[in-house]
Image 1 (cartoon, rainbow, N blue to C red):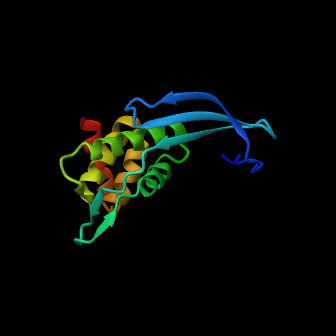
Image 2 (image 1 turned 180 degrees about the vertical axis):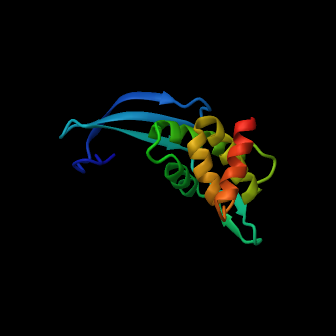
Image 3 (image 1 turned 30 degrees about the vertical axis):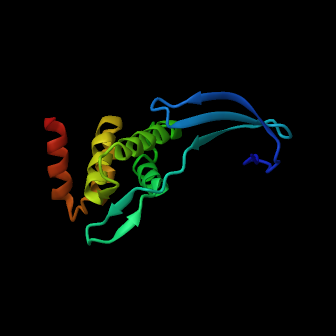
Length: 150
């Protein structure tokens, strides 16, 4: 494993843990040259999920695309990258437990929104504004009213 700081290719594992869903192994590593620490995640690669887009197109499930969207929604919020990784891990795990390998994109979007609503309400509103294509302030107001009611 190459160090992301100095690119030296010799590191040692300092700590190893399984994630809650046991689908991913988290390893804390230390570079033998610069002695900086970093985290890696190991998971079984599974390319079997297909996302059915709104227009009917199909594309391979891309967890990094989801992760980027969640990171953008959580920008400047008190949410760690570890929390985001756990969020995306759980989402992917939940999707893989479904009886079908073809998943509607709107189901994924709703699962992300439900999870963000529990994680951080501001991140939820940010994601919802893009996902639901808010046109103006009244769309924000309606979503905020619904959020406050719950």
